[in-house]
Image (cartoon, rainbow, N blue to C red; front, side, top):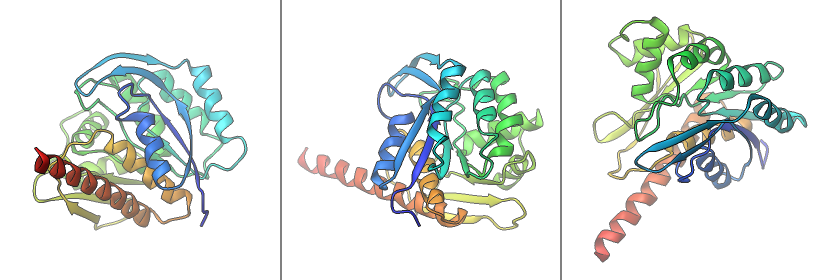
Length: 261
């Protein structure tokens, strides 16, 4: 396994520093990886709102991707916010020559503040062109429902397993359903794979802290593990473990502030 894996993140910027490329850089750095990035959009946002989304012109996005991949050292690709039909089409076309590289897609449909980041037209192209390219898709529970409904053009099925099955049926090779929006003492993620009957279960204690950018960091951590040659299940476990450590540190810091207060 490579001591210093190289990964490419294709995503938007978050001017608050909480999510997007900033979170990808932090996650890769913490794991000792080199992260190259291609910026898909520039945003102006805070924890409470997104006020501006400016797509990067397709020719610039395409050139960023080309230069990142041309020397052959990138071992895996993570895709986050794309935000427009042009960006989805540009990324899909740019990756046609790199079918050997694993691709982890964090399907960013909306911001944590509720701003829609992928409109209906972009969603349709995303489903058609990006889902079949995904080695792994990492939706949270709301994103899972939105994607399943968009694929079916109808209300989504009732269960998580059925919803994940819709995504697998659309061409995605595997779906890691994140359980952060769920209930219970544990945050349980479920890995569904094409041809598999029983999902792989990853659980961690639910911490009473809110951290932005966790989806970005998880998908990047998984991407790093895949670039090092890890299996899909093992890479998801490593990503989950890195996020668990992050939440434990945040909870400890919050408890320390409470004790001092």
